[in-house]
Image 1 (cartoon, helix red, strand yellow):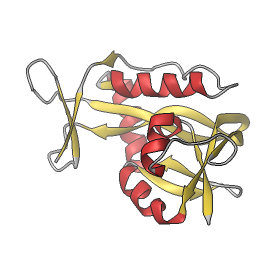
Image 2 (image 1 turned 180 degrees about the horizontal axis):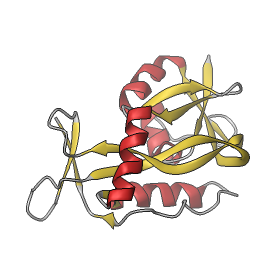
Image 3 (image 1 turned 135 degrees about the vertical axis):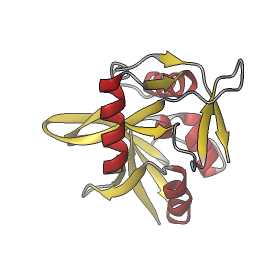
Length: 174
């Protein structure tokens, strides 16, 4: 049986859902447009590109250097008066472990009606510090995938305002 996962970023992109399912996702069967009351979508999770032992890092595509930055991604945070906009994606139970591994900066959290991925506290703290110190960046490919997902799903708002420059970076798996 599939369990719903409330998604709000790149996981809401049709191409990502299709990759996870092994076929194109179908509205109403594989996902439904939903909201998550009491939560808000923010840019408060990151990959620390300065850490030497990362499974993933980011390089400048022009010169191959590894910039000393923190790369931001979307997360949801509790906010009693807010409502997070997203999609409930029905992920086969067998795929949840793979999804957990993919979402390394997050912890899967039970919100009552569905799972969702919430920033690990240390990652959220690094993101906030990077935004404040000016070392945060948002990868252009990620931003564009999220923007496309938001346009694809009827009724989704625009992507939350970027708190850092949006730059071109190459993702490298180690």
